[in-house]
Image (tube, rainbow, N blue to C red; front, side, top):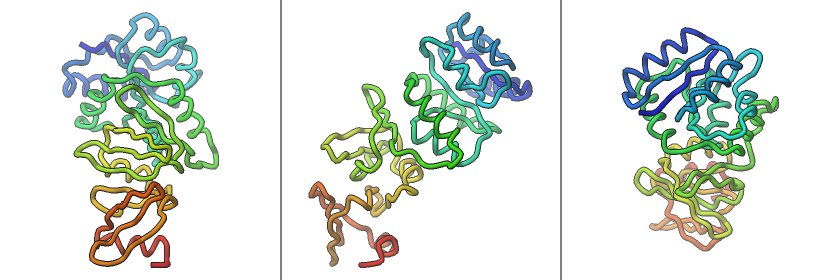
Length: 247
């Protein structure tokens, strides 16, 4: 069983999440719950949970301030929030697990399965915090890529293209590195589509700044700056034209 703690300043949210965990996640045992961040900090130290469901906006200490009080985060972490679309993308850019209120049971089950297999890095948490506190709501320059040995932060501008591999996505970086991430290409597209990336084929998402050449004909394709040729689907050609305006 996974020992879980729920920390949220809304009592109804605490009760509902505990009930949903009992219904959808039989492997989770809620050993403690609280509506005050100070008490939540003590519960974490006392119970040493496997997973913590943490609200962000709370009085006295918010979720980030609570985490900063801990010398070591040796548990899985799921942020529970009612934040907006910008916040959702901040979580995704930094590969952090989150749930949006009101919580969907199937999504809860998926997130618990995923979160139980990883531990957050301090850099991930700090990056999310900085982005949510940024009044200009600017997108980050780096993206967190969780892979087999941990999490690597890479500059978005250095991502050449992404290739679908079943339910995974392989990132190709300008320095020659490759990272296989446990997200679908559709998920990645949703994160990067506002950062000058375009889905040119069902299997490829490319960085438009890293395109060197476009070749017309029966086999429409683009040549990337690392000399790799990537096909352009017929139904994506017009979108490419729209982006560049020169084809």
